[in-house]
View (cartoon, rainbow over the protein chains, first blue to last red):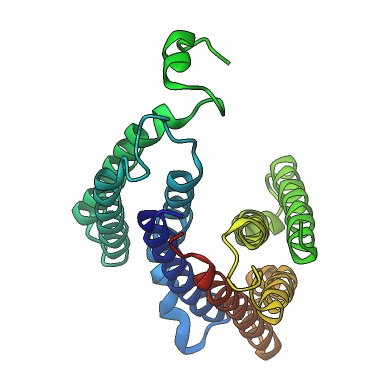
Length: 147
Length: 137
């Protein structure tokens, strides 16, 4: 597993733990009592788990698992993946905080950062989505209609 | 495929089917008061019962194993996660809609707190198990 994938997956596990802890507080808060205020944390619960946990896990695993182009090194795409990680994590935190604090501009900025992270990730993954065992030359010749 | 993975994956599929059935029922009976009461549970059945449980099962199976011995990691943590996640969801199935429909009483509070604890313990157990297996190779 490349180091960049390792860090994305570990970050996703941290978001899972944090998002689940918030969710546990919210579930207890549904019974009323002193934890009723935790229901206002729902935007953070959602952002931490959907983008911070699931999306980040998928990015990390995909960077590790998708077939590499034969002529490229193992670290190909790593600098871009670091930028993806920075954008995604800043986006998750901004959207979560913006949602909880009712700051729409911050939440929108966070979502825009998440979108930028996803677009940049697409540029890493796009060419690696292909048949196993297909050499670079064969991939070029087979074109988009190849199997 | 290890035994724990098979249990995670089969349980995930059951959760998916129940969640989709709840969604179909809710769509078929739009005015029923139980629809909104069951909606949060149905959503969590999808994202926790189906997606997260599927991820846990596949990650336990496919993530790099710990050397020496290529171990899957602590079976106690793994089975605790499986039991906690599903026990938490079962408790939630009964008491979250009940609290929404009838208001919460002392037993509802205890049951929801237990459900929250079980699910949180499950997640923390699986995070602890997978953490060591997420390593540079």
